[in-house]
Image 1 (cartoon, rainbow, N blue to C red):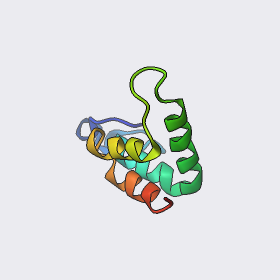
Image 2 (spheres, helix red, strand yellow; image 1 turned 180 degrees about the vertical axis):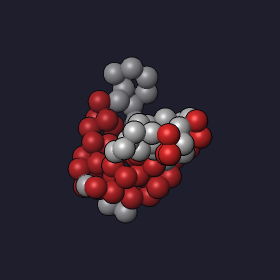
Image 3 (cartoon, one colour; image 1 turned 90 degrees about the vertical axis):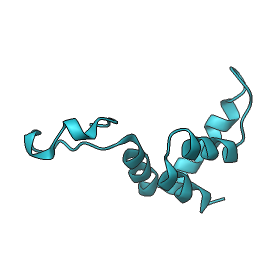
Length: 82
């Protein structure tokens, strides 16, 4: 389960096989599984940007992951590939 509300889901009360992760941890774990594919996804997001709102580069997407969503570990892994 991915939630900002991790403290209200203690592991000992969850069914077996269910883990609770913060969005930041989930993003970092997901990027770590396949950083190159994650970078492809960020590039696709950047390519689609501008349809609503201003266009953003891949670097700007990674900046937003860090500053807006506090996904610093995921952004750091992605930046290693650029």
